[in-house]
View 1 (cartoon, rainbow, N blue to C red):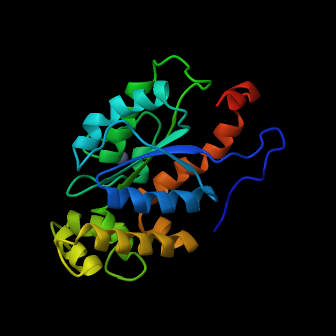
View 2 (view 1 turned 120 degrees about the vertical axis):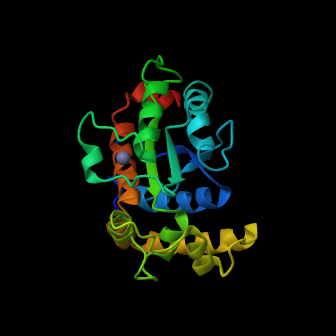
View 3 (view 1 turned 30 degrees about the vertical axis):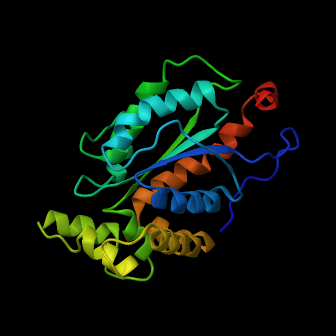
Length: 238
Ligand SMILES: [Zn+2]
């Protein structure tokens, strides 16, 4: 489903410039495909100055990446995706104004980005770099199985957690997606890309079953408007 805003005659279309930060190159590749589907068109990739490998490295380097993108690149936005593992899934209750769940990684990442950027002066013709954060519960492999494996979904995961059960482990998810717990990089990229392209054709199932994806998609959908609202001078200078 393409939901891009209609072209704005005052701002001739140029693809947005976006940086991605994930726990692995595989997750970043899949996230790029999903983000393109949400935005309704291609974007230009901006490379962050640092790479993360796993949580909590993503959280630790996020402030430095946010500052780097702001001052030293023309990035319009940053997309961050992490796995929840055994941490708290992000729920609608966390979206209340001023609320912050200290054990929810999505809330932690949003707060860290906000702290890192709120006092930065405008740079490179814009006030700030936009942000979208996703949380894969419990791991990105669950997104790749969404729509194919009826037992996988955030609601079932949360329900099981409340009962003290673990409905599936991350190792089981990997086995189901890759046929092995330790896929080679090419195999992992191939499966993740195929799954992301399947969702890109129709995002509704993934958004419905995985609120941690829907949260990221909602933030992304606010970007075209935020970018269009930037002054013509700002847009021209980019
Ligand atoms: Zn949260």
